[in-house]
Amino acid sequence: GAVVSQHPSWVICKSGTSVKIECRSLDFQATTMFWYRQFPKQSLMLMATSNEGSKATYEQGVEKDKFLINHASLTLSTLTVTSAHPEDSSFYICSARLAAYEQYFGPGTRLTVT
Amino acid sequence: AQKVTQAQTEISVVEKEDVTLDCVYETRDTTYYLFWYKQPPSGELVFLIRRNSFDEQNEISGRYSWNFQKSTSSFNFTITASQVVDSAVYFCALSGYNFNKFYFGSGTKLNVKP
Image (tube, rainbow over all chains, first blue to last red; front, top):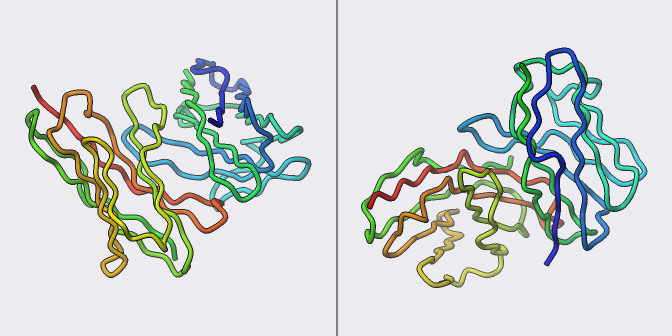
């Protein structure tokens, strides 16, 4: 089956620093990757859609300069939270899709900003 | 507009009871997909089922069953003889024909007590 991994699984960083989260499709090439954010006891909200080799498309209300997304290869997308603040603390989940097939979700990364 | 509503925020049952989780959706698409995911405390989304809009057959998988009714735009999930291990948050989701943007419901937290 299709496997998507995320690294790290959890991270603690200090306010004002940047943190990078990786999303990899392990056994397939993902033409599109998606990034979701989930606050405690809330639903998943799509942050952005990234296609390999092109700029990410951000959902309304998501700051693209704060959440930098790079999809440099068909198996790797990265989300960098720049100048993180405590309100950025959340559970970040990526998913990957091959062409028009189903999205496969990663295990998530728990970010805590102190 | 696409929307998924899970009106039940939290449900508590005693082990061996049957429980139904409700999901109502809105979409203008004629071709779409509906999903159920389980999210245990670890946070990783566990895929349970995918249904396309042209297949209204009910599905049963062990203790799990799903009832899809286009007439009422509902895709309900029933757990028969619930077990403590079923305790989790369950999300219903909707996507278009190309598995692009996923719309998640707000989730239902199921507590199964021994």
